[in-house]
Figure (cartoon, rainbow, N blue to C red):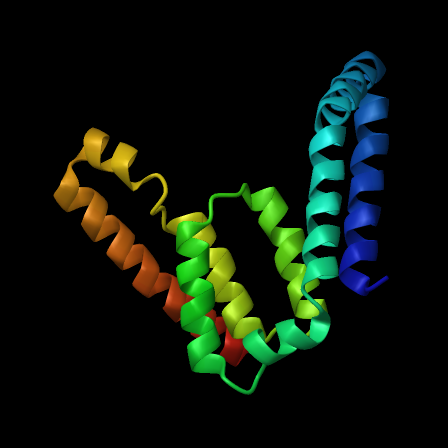
Length: 160
């Protein structure tokens, strides 16, 4: 484990002990609530693992590296951004999926482009957004979101 992970575990442990000392009953009640929430999420978490496993089974790492690798960063970034704009999956599914794609050889810029457009641009939800907020607002918001998603991806490529 890295230092960041160990420090988060340490902070969590200290906060847990402080909570226990302050009010044991509230701490145990909140742990029971957290247990219930986790039981509700187990199916979704297993679904995430299954989805990632299926994607990585049907798409070999060589193909991921060829399409989303360092060789054609510009084209792969645009393809990833368009795919993220069209795709509608929850962010908590997207983060492990993107991590797996990067582990399989995808470059960080297309991976971030996919992730940011996935959470910022909504072509699938555009009709609903247009109905609620109007065509002009929905169009401008999605265009700006797409452009800024590309800028964020490029910035992350420079940072990382």
